[in-house]
Every structure is written in C-alpha cells, then in structure tokens.
Amino acid sequence: MERLCFGTAGIPLSTKKRGTPEGITRVRELGLDAMELEFVRGVRMGDALAEKVRMAARKNGVVLTAHGPYYVNLASEKDDVRIKSMERILNTARVLKKCGGRSFTFHAGYYYKDDSNKTYDIMKDALEKVVEILAAENNDVRVCPEVMGKTKSFGKLPEILRLCEEVEGIHPCIDFAHLHALDGAYNTYKEFANVFENMESRLGAVELKNLHIHVSGIEYGPRGEKRHLELEKSDLNYRDLVKTMKDFDCAGVVICESPSIEDDALLLQNEYMSLSD
Image (cartoon, rainbow, N blue to C red; front, side, top):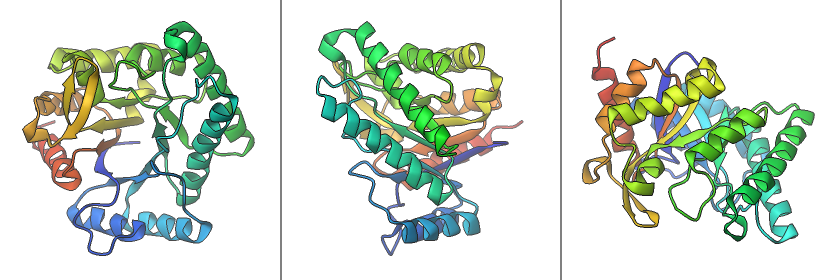
C-alpha cells in the first residue's frame, strides 16, 4: 500500500442500521479509511452479503481486513481442535477474499504443555498447511497471526517474527496494546522504533509498506492483558507510536480496538495527520 489507513475493529458504534455494508458507509462518513470484519464469534457470511460488502467497500474506498474466530488453538493436544482451528482460519480467508479484503489476523492459540519449542513447531506446521491450501485456491489475502498480550498465549513478538521469516506467506499483525501489556514495556519512541527496525531487517522493507496493526488502550497485570481501554484512559503512549509510524514512512492498515472504536481511530488519524512531513 502507498499510505497508512486508519479504521475500526468492526462496525462503528454510531452506525444507525447495524449491518456490515452500512458500517462501511459510516466509516467513510467519519472520514476513516478502513474497517475490520469481526468474525470472532464465527465466520457467518454468505456469498450474497459478501458481494454487498465488497461493493460497499469499493464504492466508499474503504480497505477491509478481518479478525478470525477466537475459538482457535493450532497447538491443541486434541486433533479435532487443531483441524477445526485450521478450518476456521481458512474460512476467514475465503470470506475475506470474497469481500475484496487484503489481510486477516487471528489468535493462533496457547502453549502446548508449556513447551514453547514444541508449540512453535506445531504452529509452524499448521500455518505451512494453511498457506499451501490458500495458494492452491488462488487466495492471496495476507495471513497475519497476531502478537498476543497474555503470558500463556502463543504469539510473543519474537515467535511471530520467526514464523514470518520461516513460512512464506505469513506476515505479522502487530498489536501494540498487547506488546505493552506483557510487561509494561514497548511504550517509548525508541521501543516502537525497535519493532519496525526488527521487522525491516528480518522481513524486508516491503513489510513496512503492508502493515496490519492493532492499537487500543490496555489494562494489564502480571499475566498480561486484562481488557481494552480507551486511549486517553490508558498509559499507552499512542502519540509516540504514531510519530514512529510517520518517521518510518509506514503504510498499511491501523485498526483501533478500543471500546470507542471510531473516536479513538479518529484520534489516531488526527494525530498522524498533524505531524509534518
């Protein structure tokens, strides 16, 4: 992509008629550029609605991303859970493709018997299968496992970046609230810059032009993430984060997941636009 687009995690709260096409129209009315389709409770969108969503996004110039179901654990000890998890990820990609979207994210799962090395190997094997199936289906949406914010969840930044290095077709979804929630770090310009420098050195400069980012305020404790907060009610240093994205000439999509999704998405966008080139 050529620029950074800001949008909401789901249909804006101010949308009068609660429907996905209507939400896309509302995103444009607000002056935002992106919306994430929230399939967190399941991928339930037929072809007819997907076509309406695609047309609404095209008409309004809104970039679509998606979030896969929460019920995913690619490293489960149970074979049926792993198989169903892969299918939920694949279905997210399939529906997003029909909607004309560009990238989707998901929570990959939890550590297998608290063995991080074994978990990594299982996750890598599963995601290799996912991208192989999507390639066979000519589905080119970007597969972006999310950086997680709980100590028991697989998806620490080094794990995600390693997956992206080793599995062609896998890209990171950087959730800066989750990064911050793990130990209170990743909250300064230098730390934000380190994330982008790491991505550029390990994955190539092109990755900074195709970002899938989540931002919100966050409440956290010893085990990491507790709940999302509005940006102004949290200690997340969003101003320096936005400045870092500007300084690194980032492009892609920034999705706001705070309780006030459109207000905080506009806050981020306005902060970004206020910075001089």
